[in-house]
Length: 207
Image (cartoon, rainbow, N blue to C red; front, side, top):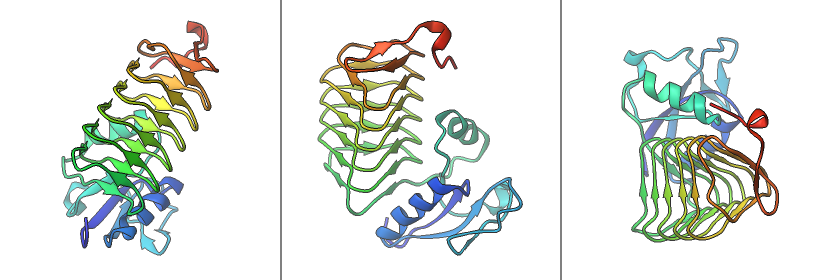
């Protein structure tokens, strides 16, 4: 990633962290796109307004934390995306990353894990061997994902949650902060607790 110039889509606090990740590896951020015209700069980098294809000249990263919004933005724009991995993180050489994915500070990802497109693997998270993290997933800070786990598209693993080996978590789930997942989780479920329990449908975050 050294000496690569990026553009970011979204001028938020999440963007500040991604800017630091890019700089940690010697890259730079040319500018940011954001529909909020009141924002003209972020950490000294210009914010140039709403996204325009003709201004998309470098690899981009969608700097938006919400998984659903990140997917909608990815579907709307041209497929010119990069990846960013903080210099303090450790990824086995066999790990694969999809476009637009961000690996934050002090993350560890072990052998033969596949991470999809536009994912966020947040600060100090650990993803063990042979996991599959599908597109638009957010693995929260200090999460521990054991070996052989599958996490479906768009799922959020809240801060500090733990997933035992071999578990399958469905698509567009919400796993609450600090939860311990010891059973498979169906698509669209909201899970809280230790051990994790699926919340009733009327309380679930249905997509």
